[in-house]
Length: 126
Image 1: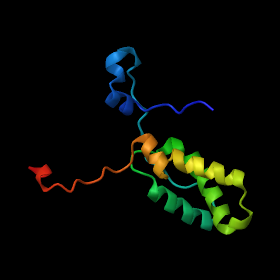
Image 2 (image 1 turned 135 degrees about the vertical axis):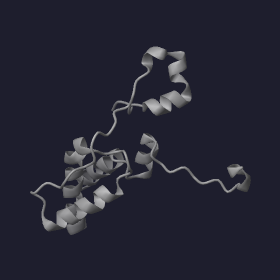
Image 3 (image 1 turned 180 degrees about the vertical axis):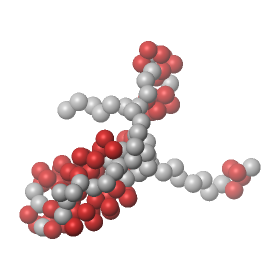
Image 4 (image 1 turned 60 degrees about the horizontal axis):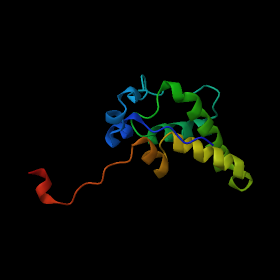
């Protein structure tokens, strides 16, 4: 499996573009937020759609990612309805999709969406 692509923000912080300026690029930006859920979803899946969309970190997913969110919703609904028969392969796919959307600690770290810990030093604000 190929190594995941490093974001431009991480490369910039590491100084990669100073060494090789021709590598400079911008990461794709989210144009529009995720729209309305597909009409094909059941009421239970619709509830999960709202839950998933509400938990995706801001600025990560947009209208181009609606099909991925739909796959997550369908798999997550299947998992919640019958967890005993949810196969390991489906669990792996679901975990990967959640990670791609920044909904796992590893996924947030990979895309740089992890919240920064607040400093406890009272003199930092001065």
